[in-house]
Image (cartoon, rainbow, N blue to C red; front, side, top):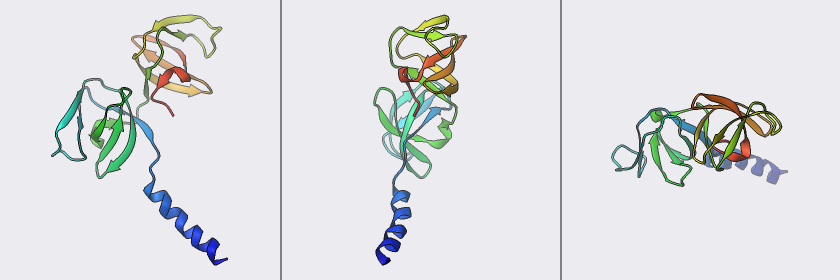
Length: 146
């Protein structure tokens, strides 16, 4: 019985130190990716794309360690991050459909690396908008969703 109580007491402690990864997007047109979790660290990359999705992997005070779709990683201040949903297309010549089925009317063809804003997702599809087009893409072709 004591062993069960002891293990039960350790479980919450273990979960405090593990962080689940999640996606956020860049809040502004210009965002600095730094080598470490403070303004004292040098800038590695200047991002120039609002709503670019980034995978948050760790945190330190008001900074988040992120990884982008090109596997660049570093630290960004939380004030530069947003909860708005977006994704990057990972397949070339991706078809944007009118409805959430491959049998619906095609609307546009998207190239690999295209930024799309996510309106909603259901099952294996997401309703997106990009460049004045609105339609449905398969989730498997998007980077920026869990």
